[in-house]
Each structure stands twice: as C-alpha cells, then as structure tokens.
Amino acid sequence: MEEEEGESRDWTGMQSDALSTIFGKLDAADLLTGAGQVCHAWRRLADGDTTLWRRVEMTHDVDILEAGAMACAAVDRAAGTMEAFSADTFVTDLLLRYISDRAFSLKSLQLSFCDKVSDKGLAEAINRLPQLEELDISFCSLYGNFCELVDKNRSQLKCFRLNECWADFHKRFDAAYERMEIDPEASWIANSMPRLQVLQLIGSEVTNDGLMAILDHCPHLESLDIRMCYNRQIDDAMKSKCARIRNLKLPHDPISDFKYWAYVDSEDYSEDYSGSDFEVDMHDDLLDVVMDDDADDADGEFNYVDDYDDVGSESAMYDDVDDI
Image (spheres, rainbow, N blue to C red):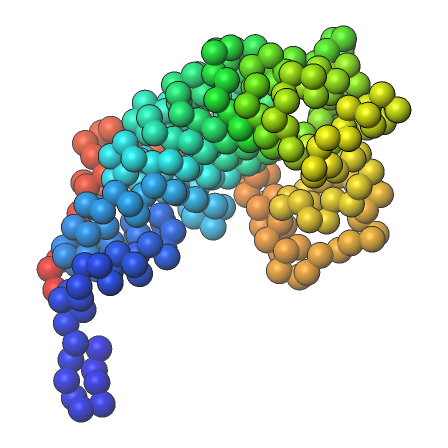
C-alpha cells in the first residue's frame, strides 16, 4: 500500500497477535478464500491458529459447490477443537459424518434448510458427538424418525430447537401419518433430555400429551417456544404446568422476532409485519437457493467429501499462493 510519503508497507510483517485479532472477526469463507490466500505468512497463521476455527458459521452467501469442501477444511484446521458449527442449505449426511468423526469437542450444531440431511444421518452424527449441548434443526424436512435412532444415553442436551413450517408438515404427513398418543419428538425430549433448559418447537405437531410429558420430565426448562403449534390446547392444566417457565411463547404469539419469520407460513402475521427490505431480500435469496438446489440433484452433483479426499487434504485445495 502506497503511503503519502511514497513508502510502502509490508503487511506480511504484521504481528501475529494483531493478525489473529483481525482474522477472528472474519467468517470461515473469508479466511479460506481471502485472508488465508494473501501470502504464506498469513496462511500459516490461519492454518495454525485453531482458535479461529472453534466457531464456524457458513451461510447461503457461500457458493454451494464450494461450501462443503470449505466446511471440511475448517474442520481440519480446528484439529479437534471446534465447538460450534452452523450452516444452511448445503449440508448432507456425508458432511455430517465428516464433522462428527473429527470435531469430537463440538458442543453446538445448527442446521437450517438442509434438505439433503436424512433422519439416519442426523441421528448418527448426534450419537458421535458426546459433548453436544445445543442442537438447532430448522426446516430440514425431517420426519421425526431421527429421534428414535438417537442413543437414549445422550442426555447432555441443554438447548434443543426443532422448527417446522406448519403447512409443509401437513403436506408431508396428512395422507400417511397417524399421530401417536405422544408424538416421537416429544417422547424423545421427555425421556432423554433431563438437563434441557431451552426448547423451541415452532410449527411443530407436538400434542398436549407430548408437551405435558416434556414439562414433567425436564425440570430445568426455563424457555419454551411453541408458537404456531396448533395441534394442542392451552387449558388450565397446561397453564399450571407452564407457570414455572420464565420465557414462554404460545401458539398465537407474534412470530416477527424469529430468525426465519419470512419462511413461516402464517396468515395471522403476514399483514401485521412485513420486515425490513434487507430481511425480505435475505430470505428471498435463501429460499431461491433451497428451491434451485433441488433441480441440481440428479446430474453432476458435487460430492465434496469424495472430491476432498481425492486431493488429499484442504492444503492441496488452498495452497496455490505465492510469497509476497
């Protein structure tokens, strides 16, 4: 960079602690495709400082064809220290297996709009993550069977979010699904999460019996969000059970503060809250990605885990950098 005096600054000589602070404010994609590609000195720092990869968040802004390979690279650079992974749209069973086999310290897993994640794939990943405390699954087109496949000894979850779109749920289940006396998700929560503190089930088919079981078996529950859960009634018995919940959101409460409010099919609130232009554009873009992704499945699907293994390691993918 040219200074006013005509001098140039050698950015490769910046102190590593200052660089680490700056790198810590970048997301995984920026580190892998931007800062980490500037020169060998910056790459060595991005590659060697595992603290930069403890919390990884990857959104739809990342090219889907590259996102899987970048996620694998982030997992490798964390070297077993990754504590949180959050992503939307591009995650598959293969990527979940890759993460769960290597990120054994993972405490938080958040997935949204990941239609390629199956019940079996998710359950197997959960079973491989012994320290998992937070699980957030939103609009991933699961069918509830994953709950039955999870090891019942996985009782360490403190925060669980399983959000569905009410209209989409009924499209999948109305013709072929008979509700149990206690639905599978609620039964799993009640029987396997004694330490649960935060529960969000927006758009869920949770029943009165299921919710009562959760309240009876989760004594530490402090936050309960059952907005758009229209399959149950708030009677006096339910009100009495919910009295101890500090943060309670009921089926007809406003949905405008929910991250994915624009995706939720709710005629009750569509006229009351339209959101900012930025929020509307963001959700429109996300839904475009979800819809377009289905069209690319049949031919030429990018198998990033196999391609990643073919090149040997993430270093082969991001190593073509000349020294400055």
